[in-house]
Image (tube, rainbow over all chains, first blue to last red):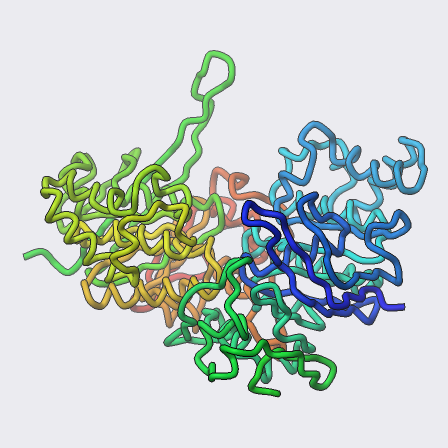
Length: 308
Length: 320
């Protein structure tokens, strides 16, 4: 059974303008237990909503009108499914009034029926797995640095022994050096403990090293889904190419960044035809009249009329 | 005539007092900027790179005259302006902040926000509005945007308005404090290109503060690496990247991955043992983290020394 299977998923939000589509007909898979699938896109593209749906955490004003998600064959909202989420902002994810130990122990108490003392011992053990000293169980969140807090979130996530981790921009708030450490740790957890991960980010440079498969999202749709080597070697969708060419680099001198005109459309305002057409340098008449369908290419797909 | 050095600082320091909860006595200082000597040439972009807490934003505040230094000198166009009131040259030095969402007054139309600095300088309203239109065009927005409120604009558009507002008084020096770090990559590319073009057109000098070395490499001519309130390494962009000397610079460069999976990324990052505020009182500030530290590093503070032309480093490993 696949760790993650998303089929034809469409999600809407209720706003003052009525129901607005934020995720449209998304198909994605995680096939292996030690696979990292990166979901890359700019703000407003629906990547966080998709992550919440996978974690069964959609807010009350959202509804799935089409399609389904299966996590190892189970519905994400069922009680038997175990998905852990790591959010961007560790300070608001943690309860400021509880010690680190108590917050990790909650997982053992509620999910594994342990007593408090036993749970605290387990919490102390799991801290070493994320590179923190066991003595940290008595500390409060405000006593830790940003990177240490993020490690605590990871500890809470893996304490659950999850079938899937959803990591939503887990290192965006961190400094580059701390980010490098936390990313290495996350990757090791996936590879050594066989916990698949849906890794949501806007940073393609990180994805080049973290991910196995990459899904590029634009305006609620997955426009390209490939394994990372072929995607970086030969990006197919014009949006993917634009993203890659708009990145400043540390390792080589870039004299000019390629600019995509305009801004991503907001949900409810998606253009007719291909949703990227107002910004696409290669758009032709068909792109304005007809929505491109998904074209399957070696273990992936692209949604663009150029490849029809 | 003054030389072509526009901005110069001489052992600039900015300390913040730490007071006790009881009786509010001073129990110590946070040395946000601890002896910075900088020179920025006219028309140059200096990229100031450091982690959060390194003091880079405080240095930006001092150089934009929004706060006074504790000691040291700030020389602008050859004149000591350390104690000069801000008002005298408010139009000449401007700052653009990271967060365009909170920098614009939500109750004012864009045109009102734009003309404010001009009105303060004694322009009449008509003249100011004409200029506002001109500068909106310069940053890639149109006349229609004059009449809208900030919430109707996207993050990228707001940052364009902030840049227009900084430019409108025809400044010579702009401090850009992480102007793109809250924006998406495609918008970031647009803003970086815009800043580059404007600099060429108007011959403005930038201090570009960022934690992102890739962005710094793209936009800057000179790069200064800051740690714990001090400049650790400074030099021409090409020398910094082709021949980084300070262990901290090397760590920073290796910490950010290249967007290419075929290049192996092996960040050399020393263990996470100290925060920025946690360093030795004596000796090199980087010593607690440094993988190459020796006894000497704990005893004496290294000076910033020039190792080759336009390339200085603050580290005991390098002696002239």
